Length: 613
Image (cartoon, rainbow, N blue to C red; front, side, top):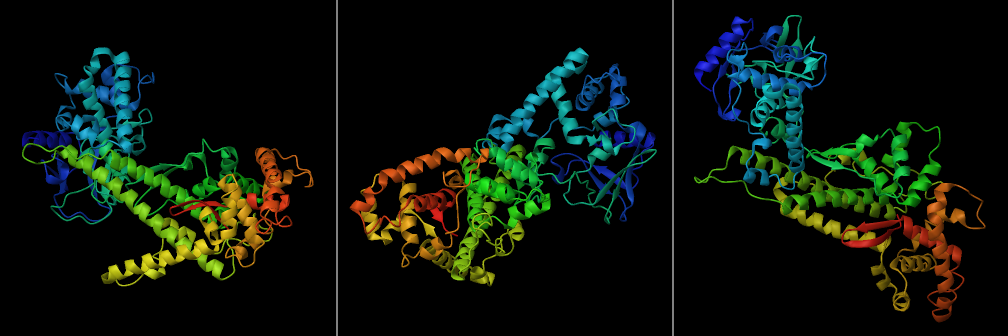
């Protein structure tokens, strides 16, 4: 930008009543991606106004419609399209009042819509890849709308796309302006030249005579004067403005919790609604600082089995308010569901991470070995997403380790952490380590890895050792899987001769465990003696229940009854010591099958576990 254009712009501002006596505009700077920047001409005290423009210099919908010669009340074009059409017209007009301002606007932008093919490839696998396609479609749609109403006044698509980029990167919300009801956005010459700085304290205010900026903190003479565009992520900044902020605290990775394929989706959404969690809350933003507070309740409900859902709905009192139901989702669902929820999120985040790594490409490098500015910004954005996902996975794994240790501690203290709806009279979930809410923000450092930062190797070894010990204890005491059969050679030998699914074998094994006091899982199984899966309400001898919520379990119950009839008394005849008839009644088999159905858990590399805690 030439010094002459800056001089002409400042003169135009001052001639039309603007006040910029405390600031000065300078040409391209390293911090402005080749653009202009504004600096303090004097020391500026907190809450002191440093820039002001009168209403006559604000470009509103009314200004645009008058210049374009269309009705202000037609509503045919959006505020964005009106502003873009106005800019194209004024940029190429023979004489324009707005020429000094338009001459200050950049000729090109660093937004992804202007990336070349090599630079666009850096965005492959990121959310912005799809957002860019949407933005291109949006620009073409807006050009078509303007062309239909204004004809040749909007000129070519390239010229109109330039104007749309100006609006995207420089417009302000109409709420800032009094008397701008007819426009979604407005342009504020001078005030749109301040670069962005996160967390900077800036006040925008509309007065009776104009619009002003005031600082919320002291500024020294010669310092660059920044605006604060709001709590925008690097994805928003790159798409809308063409730059990223290193270490941006507002950057995130978008996670959507999708219930659409869940057979219990309607029921789960009903539970969430009772807790005050809306459908829109399914879209969550994961940041380096931790998990959003509503993500874990969503995941806990998603992790519930059909049996869990029916049981929970039957035990939530009709007069419970949203806060009480939310408290149940936070503290009353047990360690098993907590571990399932975190495993779901770990799986989801892992898929996002794998997608990023699969499509990773390096930035385009020029002949001199340098990377283009666009490529540098795209790479910064991509690497930040990778960091967010890596940090989230690390936190989730640390939390899983802590939960495993917690589960072992509970079992050692002869306590349980079952949902209140599973066993009559069961108390609420004991306080999780560091409190669930605290873990949602940043899981606490497990006690066995705390210590001086200078002893990281030792701390890491201690953590690995403690995790292995906790895992071993958990497997020995409360986790059942087909691998557990090895500790009961008689059952393992018999199981090899029985051609049934693993879930049926686990159900048979659980009946045997409950009847065998010397089994390492006997104590955990006996604590579940009072548990009844909701499908058992459909048995002929149960109290008659016509609840439609039980219908999904009817086929499963019939199938289990047929399986038991097929296996017994045959197994009791061939393996009387392993499957004694007195222990393997239909009621006991259905009790165990209900636990296998509801208490499933994938733990570490072992899938198809049954968690008895």
